[in-house]
Image 1 (tube, rainbow, N blue to C red):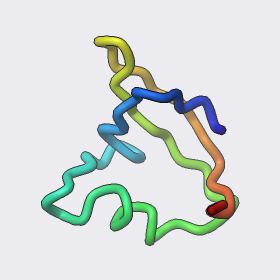
Image 2: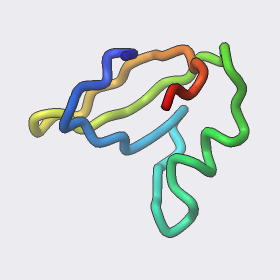
Image 3: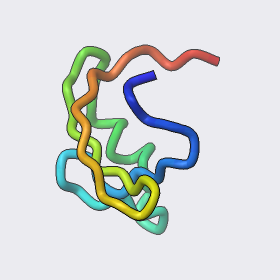
Image 4: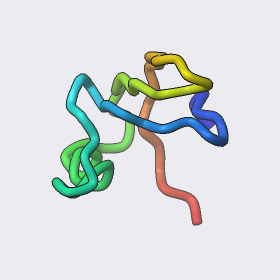
Length: 60
């Protein structure tokens, strides 16, 4: 929804590495709230790309 595409791998959030052994994405995002702007570093098609996103509500 925020510019993240199918197949993208989120590697960093606001410069902090996303490591599954440390709780990964959920641990980093848990300290944020709806409306916060964050910078995602993603791996897309063999390149590192940075995008700014605004956090929204989780939709099931």
